[in-house]
Length: 205
Image (cartoon, rainbow, N blue to C red; front, side):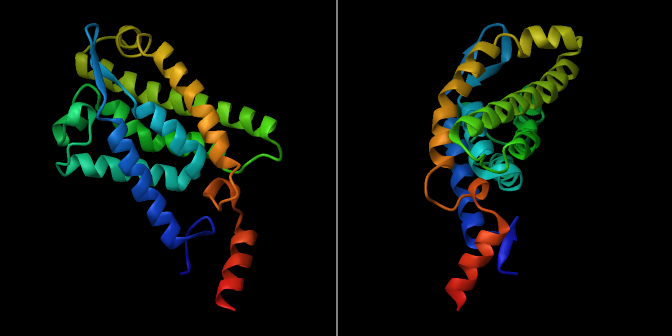
């Protein structure tokens, strides 16, 4: 097969997955604990927003899965340079495990660039909302079960304290995402199968 996923070249796909998994790892290094929750504030969600908007559903999910594998095998890429399965099984595990699902769901909402920047901005905003809601739903459900509290209490502990910060992250990520989506590069969200096939045919002819 000359293609990896969704008509995008295999080598570029693997490179983008590795690059953004590494960027997500770097974003996790900044960790700010808060007294009312066992879950810290990090830049992870900011990077998941960007991954979602630039890589689309499949490659975005794979980049997040790669990041989780990095941490699971012992690389210190989780919040505060932590690592291991104990983190994935801890109070913040639901948020981490939600990253691939959220990236896929949000990436599906913005899997193709719109015909104008204005329409594309709306599309990416919807994608960010889907991404954040998915992370919160899975993360809060996991946290509630871990702490043996109600889902409502889980929202108070693991949702509301982070919402203003995560909205700010979306505001910061939006112009970055739009900028990259409209660069003259072949990205997964700005490339369709027919255009890639044509490019590949020209290269091989």
